[in-house]
Length: 315
Ligand code: ADP
Ligand code: MG
Image (tube, rainbow, N blue to C red):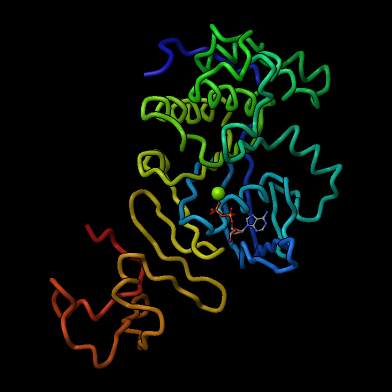
């Protein structure tokens, strides 16, 4: 699927990926009525340079908020965020603008927010590169080569508003990588696309990531997309609730020892349930529900004992 020919865009200079470190990141939104909405409550997360991570989690769990903080588009209410050695949570708007134009590219959620609709593909790339110096632009890959790389060789002078959804997302991706970012952030980049367009965009994200050695974070609710990432981070209630690494699922212990049960277990252990937690071995805890001896529907009595140690894949 996708373009048959690989066009080398190595002249972007292979900037290499940048690492991310979040420490106790909190973010509040103030609504028009003056209420505070807690979008993030204590996110601790480290992403290594060049790593590829999919953010999952229910709607409202803080995925988009976290992505905009990593992209330097908003600043956290509290906590610290490092991109490489720079603490971006402390930088002023001017330095953040520099980081956004050189080192980090963000594809925002929604197909209309990343492109100028009445400009052509080529003009959109030129716009994305406005903040580069003339020397940087001279060294950068030619706009037509980049457009060819994302399968838009025939759309170079086509106006965005006449393009299909898949073409727009591929153009948005081309614009995002046109500055040679060290970190590529994409919020639901494939949620509005057909399966074929979705697969093409994901293949391009990984392919361009290989070309640039870029660190990549993609928000998605599509299992097919998440499956292409070696690491998943699942947000729950404004913090990191679980992680998947190489197919194994782990629950993440949060601030003050908070643990989120996996969704399929939470239904059987409703909010307010009294449980006992006893260490069994050094690396094993037993969570039990004293008194609940009736087996769960279709289960055995072991259903009332949950092991809160790192979870093996239950399947
Ligand atoms: P997700 O991307 O996982 O759906 P968001 O980061 O968009 O989650 O939102 C997290 C929480 O913050 C939600 O409760 C949402 O309603 C709230 N929120 C997001 N953006 C705003 C905003 N601009 N103003 C007020 N509340 C917001
Ligand atoms: Mg979102």
